[in-house]
Length: 456
Image 1 (cartoon, rainbow, N blue to C red):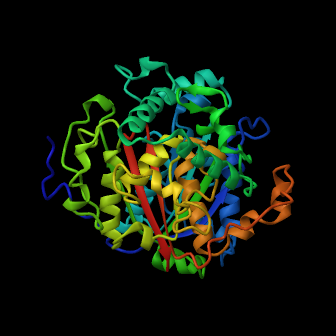
Image 2 (image 1 turned 135 degrees about the horizontal axis):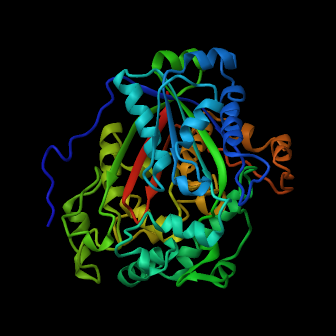
């Protein structure tokens, strides 16, 4: 039994406000032989600096930067150690200091956390966060084995060197404990593939029925191909700044009111039982009957303590009372449909055991109570791992700045990536969006960050 001490649950604070100024993306593809990694990072940074209505010229911006944070999941893919040094040089930021962050699938979120800490402490005032992944220089089979190395190689990797196998076991256990039908998970895949249809950056858009998802080829039972994230190539950039610098750069910065992290054991079998860590809108009464069914322990094999920890800290840091009431949009790390429904519970959208209600009720859809993964998420749009957590925050930034249409609806932007804007295109701009949340998640829940952004 694990019990927290008061120091463990200390709520973080920023010593000075932290803002997000601008964001930039590339499009995302299974293969991208036309451009090398440095070119993709330059393209994403150029979008952030030149297409976000900043009040300064690019060279003036470059002279304002005083620290950089880089985000790449694995050196293996590009076969380049110290890749951040190479990208840093290409972006023209030498001899400024920089760090490269690696926390598995949560690398992008952790990189933004590192940048926020630098700004909040006064160490830096203007920090570009640049993330990428180069996943097309190896076969899909080899790529899967690299990714599977982010699980415990002593125990879990032997299950097949494929992450879908780990999450398939979680799906089976979760369904057994909570009586969740396959159709519920399929709804998540349908939604996210569909929203990806309205993004010029997306790799895997599609209009599918529940039957299409259920009858698709199985990767690892019960998960089908269409319920799994894509392996991608691409980059993303987010510019983090203190208050003074932010308003020098733009009239519409967005406040990063909180970003917090949690972790849990790499080996899922070592996840010991403990009392449920309650979020601000929960009480002991919420779970009075929870362990009377098939569920015997928490977090066990079906919940992510790292997600709950990150949300607990971030909600208390930002003054969130109830995520369904306080957030206008959400980006989850939908690596698999099962991890998405698990996350619904971990971050308090529904009590544990009732996550299915969030998707089945319609709350998760555009114009629902809390639109989720309007970007298309990892299933529909991208999982260039080092870029993913940054990509999520860029999409939320544009929503809060009321610029979603600018970056998604212009036919010329689609043409830039060799695509045609769909005839049935519709705007997914959330009306009067003021606050959003993003979950960046690694492994089988080994590292998670929870970021909250709000209108300044």
